[in-house]
Image (cartoon, rainbow, N blue to C red):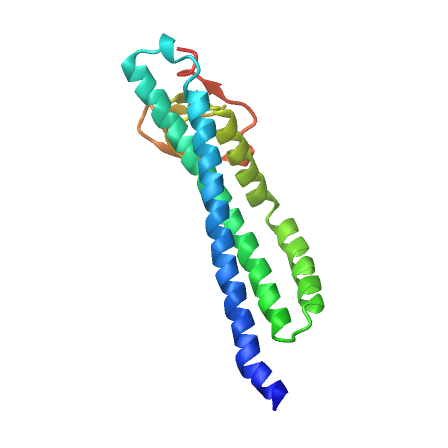
Length: 186
């Protein structure tokens, strides 16, 4: 009888507690990440302000806000995935399932997906580095080899350019080997 009561009262309570803790931890980590990114953006934005005109300052601030939002979104996604994977594994363990085979299978699947998605991972990593280094932003005119155009969208995986003829080009961030930014030098 004691075991039956533990299964119907104790286990659901432990599962609920695990999920509540996961929600709280995720919210706290996202809040901390947002604060750190905003603080870093504000510190970086305060440098060289006296040399900028009002219009240039607003453009620079807008660009920094875009970069901060992109990095913040990425970190929120990573935090969410990490916290919920741990929560699900904890819940499965609480319910009495052996999680060792699940973790082993997940590791094998992860390696297989990693090999299959190398170019996708390469594009995302290049996009993250490109945003952090502020190589170019929306409105910049860049030369990436066969195409020179105005940047109309910067994503973590793909950047969209519009050339002088109005053609929209999709450039995978991982495939760019050189960038000439005509706008930043002006």
